Length: 219
Image 1: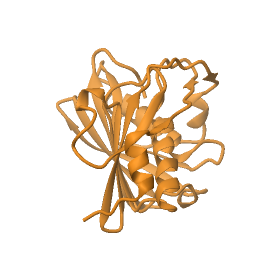
Image 2: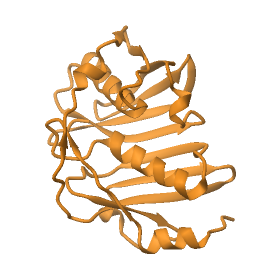
Image 3: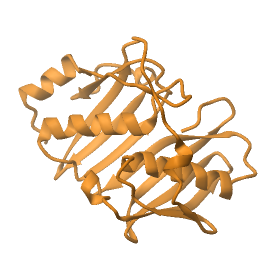
Image 4: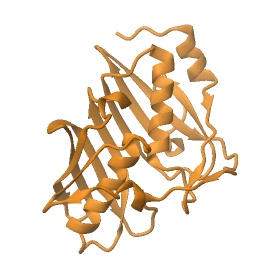
């Protein structure tokens, strides 16, 4: 059974408001920024990186957000949740959800996804590159997976939307420093849902999932 501190209770009641930015020409918060914001909160709460992270992205966030711990099933309904993270630390699991504050985002930061992929290499069903220090590892994973979809599933005309992520053990940024990162296309269910595997130095560390949507955003 999980044990909660006063810090956890405060997080559930008051939450932590975010100061997100838009990147490039996007009018929504990129999944990599949401992921690392959640990861920073986890490190602050438990003084270390989680052993395992599962994240699901429900709706594009187009305004500022606020993270809250969910200590029970009470609280915001699933319709109000823009992203949801399950962090495993040893035998305990903790749920962090992202809601909107409806406050506008006013800062736009330059972002060139083509530059992220400048040193990447494509093969039949995979893309690889040495992890760069000038972008965070999730920006690189997302950009690589998106490029892989455009090549491997070129016949799918809907937009591919980043919707789920599962990573185990390889969570800290230093785990990726100058490592060989590889994304492999594994499954495509009826051109609706895809699953790709994530490898670091040829070791499997997790999966990333995309959904094809007719009217949505890109990653």
